[in-house]
Each structure stands twice: as C-alpha cells, then as structure tokens.
Length: 303
Ligand code: 3HC
Image (tube, rainbow, N blue to C red; front, side):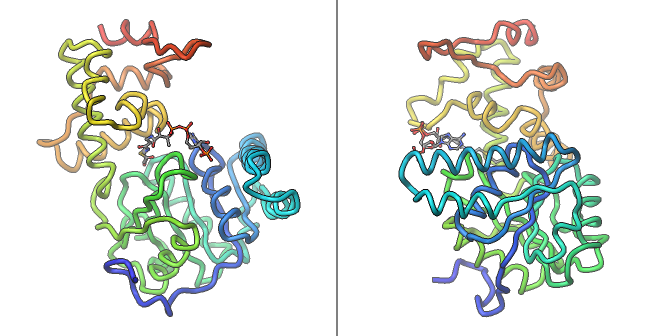
C-alpha cells in the first residue's frame, strides 16, 4: 500500500550508488544501513581524512558484528565492505543517484554542502537531508535544481528504529519524493510524509518532553527524580539518557530552532546551554557493574 501522500512509485528513479556527506554519528550509521539494504556502492565524505577513516572503520566494524551474530555470511560481509569507501572529494559522488547529508546542524553549512554536491552530480541525483529540525525548503532555495531536495530524517540508533520522516519541501518534485519513498522501503523503514515545519513531528514532541524534564531540574527538582518520573510509562530510555544518545549539542540546536519558530511555546534552558558550551556529553555515567550515577560535574553546572 502506498504511504499517505507518496507520489506514484512509477516515478521513482533507480539508485545504483549512494553518497553520504559527513562521517559522524548519524552519517556512519546511514552508510551502514544503505550498504546493507541497497547493496550498492556507498561513498562517505568528510572534512578530513581522520573523520573519513573513522566513518568507514565504523561501517566495517558493524559489518563484522553482523557476521559475528551470523546475520550475514562471510562472503556477504566481504561484499558489503568492498562496497563502502571514503573520500575527501565530493567528485566521488559524480555517478551517485542519491546523496544524503548528515553534517553539522546549521542551515548555512547544509546549504553550502548541497551547493558543492550539486557541482558534481547529474541533474537527476536526489539530495536528501537528515536534518533534525531545519527547513528543507530553505536548504534547497539557492540550488539550480531545488526539486531534487527532500528531507530524510532518521532516528538514532538508525539500525534499530523503524521510523523515517520524509519531508516534502515547497519545491520538492514528485520524482525525488517517489525515489525517497522507494529508497525508504528498500531500507525497510516505516516511512511517513511530514510537513516541512520546524522539527517536523517527532523532534517537536521530543523537545517538549526533554525540555520539561530540564525545566523541572532548572526549577530545583533533582535529576534523579525528574529524569525517572516517566519510568512507569515504560519508555525504553529516560529522557536524559536519550539526550546523551542523540547528543546534547544536537538537542540544543533543535530546542533553539523550536524557540525561534515558536518563542511562546518552546524555551531554551540557560543551564543546558552552559552544559553544551562546557563540552559535556553525559548527564549519567555507568560503572563497571552497570550502576547509573549522576555525573558529578553536572550538579555543579546546574547550580
Ligand atoms: N547503535 C546500533 N545498534 C544499537 C545501538 C546503537 N547505539 N543500541 C542498541 N543497538 C542494537 C543492539 O545491538 C541490539 O541489536 P540486536 O538485536 O541485533 O542484537 C538491539 O539494538 C537491542 O539492543 P539492547 O537489547 O542492548 O537494548 P534495548 O532493548 O534496551 O534497546 C534501544 C536499545 C533500541 C536504543 C532502546 O533503548 C530505544 O529504543 N531507545 C530510544 C531511542 C530513541 O528514542 N531514539 C530516538 C532519538 S531522536 C533522534 O534520533 C532524532 C534526532 O534528529 C535528534
């Protein structure tokens, strides 16, 4: 059954090669998913060789884990590894049909990335963004072919979480959208079409509940109490553990986007800002026995 709002699948173009811009937390997970499900060449790029090597190394290590769990055969593992490569040069995307970016969450950075990619790819190549909250329409605005841009928003851990938010920008064409849905299906994700609105749907909800936990702590409720208050609902992770998984800097960016768009509905915690500016990534730590403890510096930062 065609997902609600998806164009006719006959408009979808085949994808024989994928480019991934960025080799960080999300990008490397995306490279793994694409190679595993599409079984086509996947090229990762980043700003320096160390990052590229780390991204390719992550994909290879995860393929080894799949082999260890007997989910794939040794032949398949070798085939998949051979399909993944890294490059510092976006010219490596020349024959790609689908390029996805998962770089720093800043509109101008993403616009620049797409402008550079567009110099190398054919007019038909789809440009997808894994943005958490930014406008897909604005990301496409200055391109020669804005109709090729589509939002393709995954959730961490990418290999496990089934949801994929597909975003139609104001100028997204039917062929790009149909290709996005076809690729989403090949990736075995549950695709939903969402409006190009700040933080789409899921991150808007997440920002609300993460924000309210942080607000409670700002107001004096201990972390232990505020973060565990929702445990009876059976969520797989408490909000602040989820914040660590997503990355506090990303969560802050999303909160700031929401605050700019809806200042009366979403605030940004100054304590949270100081936490991110201090380079902190953990609220909770776990000892060797798996006991969860509040990071000692966090309490200080919140004073
Ligand atoms: N990366 C890759 N795989 C992971 C992983 C990770 N970080 N964490 C867990 N997994 C895999 C495990 O390998 C295991 O796979 P297997 O079945 O093949 O062996 C499977 O997930 C289950 O793991 P566990 O049994 O160890 O752990 P849990 O059952 O506790 O599940 C979880 C872990 C899936 C991470 C679960 O806690 C969960 O769903 N948490 C909520 C995550 C969430 O809500 N993410 C959304 C964040 S928002 C976002 O990303 C959007 C962005 O724009 C901000």
